[in-house]
Image (cartoon, rainbow over all chains, first blue to last red; front, side):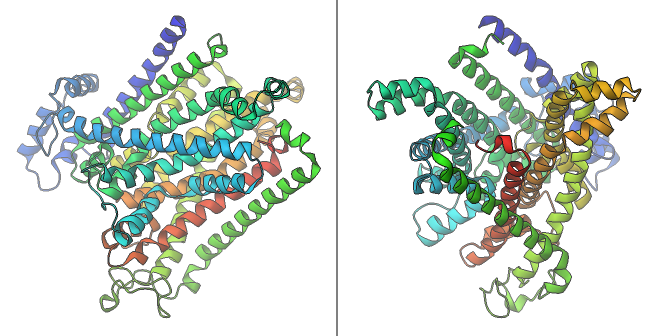
Length: 305
Length: 286
């Protein structure tokens, strides 16, 4: 296990370097002189020179890359609009995104696993058809439209829940449903397929023919084995949510990191855009690493590969 | 998988019919929406950009089946023209990314070693930007615009095509016909393009169909964020982001463009799944 861990950690190093390099290069890939791009229209030559100095834009790229990375973590890299260290601007928003994604993945897991098991144990019944219908709808649903529909129903028509913003618990409900439901559809599909495969294996048949209660066999023996691939899907979905949350955040005016990145694109606050994108990508890489490690600790067969 | 075999032929047959029916529904939706996109100039009742401030935010009526938006523009006409916008971008992007992605993936698999490492590690990095984030980053670099959107979606879809092509070519490259071609003096590149790639087509066609669905979701998502197609050009996601501000007074503006996205994406998903079963019958019980 220790070897596996070390190997796996070494594998993500080049990925992290690549991801940070791409985030850094964003500014330089924008057509035109980066200093002019940041300064915006109507900036004087002095303004442009000041920006060039502040961001070290006339230094070699390698040095600029180092300034970007070290500045990000030391707080020297500042947001253009707030003049605060980007890391200080980002952390609360990132926290909000993680809270939203966290609650959404709970919704997705509970609903998805429940639907998946029911569908598998009642194969080809109306429950199966209904839950698989739900999962087909879920993967085709534009997430921001789902959010709009939920607002129309629960906020505009029924007046039960707030339209947006982040206040009390009530403000979490619609955003986490929006982000969680499509993921629930995917989890349900996976759970059903995995359960069907396990339910058909010899050890389950043996358990049932030995007279063990069917419920116990399904929930104790089958479920535990069927959950292994489901854990991976849930983990991956959580990672995707960190990036995909931006749409939900924008529907509900949720003060998350994705929304901050998009707003910063409009205000040309490039340090914030670059660091925000980097932070989301890095957390995605680490979530995937976590999923891999978790997977191999549940399923020891994989470690030997 | 095995359950199918045990549970008798009736359920197997019924299952196939049900699945084929879904593929048929998918094909029907796809044809319908593509037809609407192609015929937009002739079937759209109004010009999509024609404003009429006297008729702002009107609900559905005989004159405007789907109502009007804040500028009094006919929502049905905007949806019809929006199909044209979405399709031209998504088809072009999927075409480009499938050609480029398949070629890169195939080279990685067929020539292996350094090629494989460089190409696949680069794609691993691109795949580390989750969900729509990669497209957002590219649009942040290039700025909004139709060509930039094609570029962003091409890059976004590349890794998937490369991975599938790589897997398929790895499965083919040690087959006997490849050795035979090599012995008869074919060059490596011509073996790859003339013999190996045609054998890997079916998963790629399936993927291309499903990728159109993703592309439409990303185009409308970027539009919703204000990073995609810019108003007044009609685009479903962009129109929904405007509608978001008037949900209380004009809920209909937030409904119809969403139905358009949803149905189109569902059509391509159903059709892609159906194709998958038709082309890869071994997979059918999964």
